[in-house]
Image (cartoon, rainbow, N blue to C red; front, side):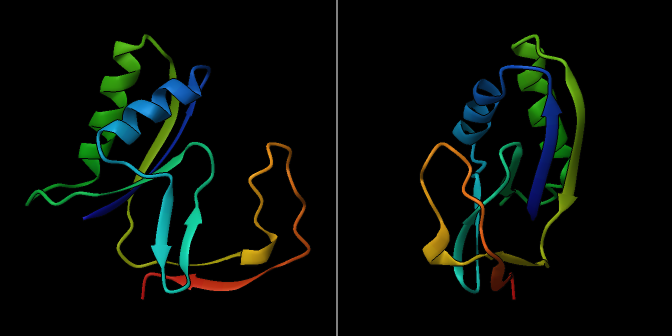
Length: 112
């Protein structure tokens, strides 16, 4: 099962993200046109355990935020098996820390 985990916390975003990455979440997704990065507090995970569901993702973030004593403002875990989106043009991506405004998003990106 593929799960998209979207969350808001008051602080220590990088700490929480690193803990989630360490247990198998990723901050990018791969589709028909390659990989694209997800927004900062959105992660993806493919659960291989039979019977795994969105509750597993909810449990993961609750456990991590509880251990770090961080207030979890909101969290949404969704079944992410069939999706479609539009991403930025590959040549417009940047690793700069300051935001780069893109002229337009032009690539169709999907799971199928």
